[in-house]
Image (tube, rainbow, N blue to C red; front, side):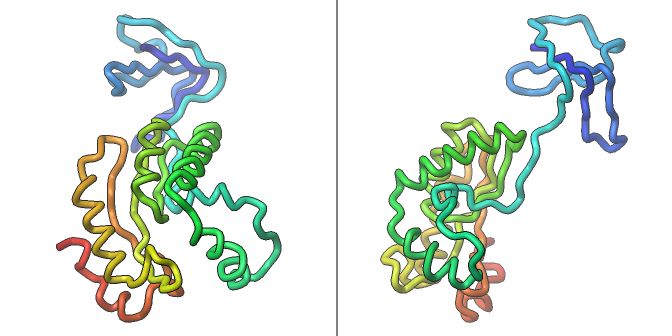
Length: 203
């Protein structure tokens, strides 16, 4: 498939912009980018685009399934939002909730040109499935935290073990997903966990 656009922004080291430009794609890979005048002979169908063609945007800090909590709180201090509005709701999330919250987020992100996110959340199996089904890209870094009142996160040690097991199982989830590990926050991971953190995910 060949794509021709009024302007092609390459994001290469020279910050090249081709007006107009063409992009050739074969087998899901970009094989050629450049100005229309320099394009090689077309070997497939051509799709013309009005406007700008550029690489997808990347959101490097996301908790995308939280689309489910949109409107749950407005204009309140962070502590109130977390302890009174968010955490009571999150503690009741099931796998399907997170899956569909992530699918909704994927649709909204793609509509805005965001093709890749870094996700630090829970129910990582559901996030992985949603990303693969939606066709987006993701750096999936499940959050290590401790929430004794939540059956799923009784201790940071248990959560870290679960996350490392998930990472080992899904390290080869596909060329659109990379699995890592993330410390949730200073308020959800005890100081003991922070001190023990360096090097653990690499073992």
